[in-house]
Length: 322
Image 1 (cartoon, rainbow, N blue to C red):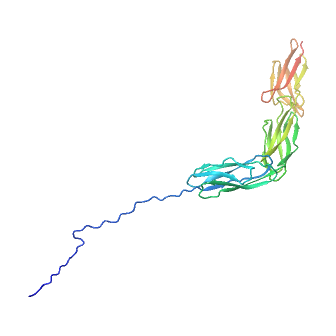
Image 2 (image 1 turned 180 degrees about the vertical axis):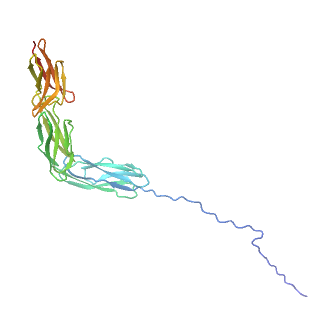
Image 3 (image 1 turned 30 degrees about the horizontal axis):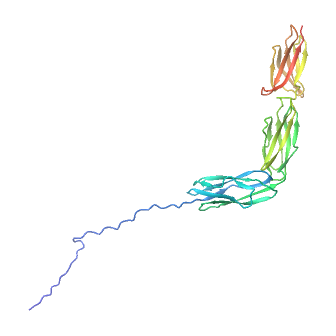
């Protein structure tokens, strides 16, 4: 009797009765993070040089934020013991790309050299946070004037000079005046010694003298050049006796008087002809006078100031009658 061995085979089919597996999913996209930066950049010079004791000059420096986030400054401090320096701004915020100007004042109390460091405290991420500061207190003025004053006649005009004599080669100065009748001052600034020139206007407003000044200033100090000017150069009033039948007459304004002002007449029988003659001592003009057919009469010519303000001189003419 034969026996049979039954063998079963299991044949798998990958494509039979099954679905394809899913592809793996990608992770979500992310945005790169930019780091916040607060970068300090300092600029400016705080070298005051020579400053007279008691002077109060100022210099400035700038704190810039070149980062991309707001910079917070919590302190602007100066080397301990240097109380002669002071800052006008010590804390606050500086936006990205912006800057803050800080003014430092130097007030030396003794004749000595002061030097130190100004430190910036804040939440900066990088950049230098210190800047040097220095200055020297001096008991000697930066410069002297020679002469220190001048006496000018009421006639004025130009070509006057005085000298600035610097005590030190580093003395830098500026020149100014608030008196309008002192003008044309040159140069208006300089370093070291120099000769300055200036002009003085004619004192045609009053017979009283006047005083003005030219200020020569430097860091922490200055000095003044005084200008003393006499009163109106012309005789303020003159009286002339003229005959009844006068015609053309040469009229002398008086020593030092010049026709750069306004003439006013209070009578119709006095005329000034166009022709005039200038001399080194003054000016003459041709005056035409009508003949007087009646009683003696009086007329006046008033010479006003350059701007029509103030009495400069008055001339009285007394004409005899027939």
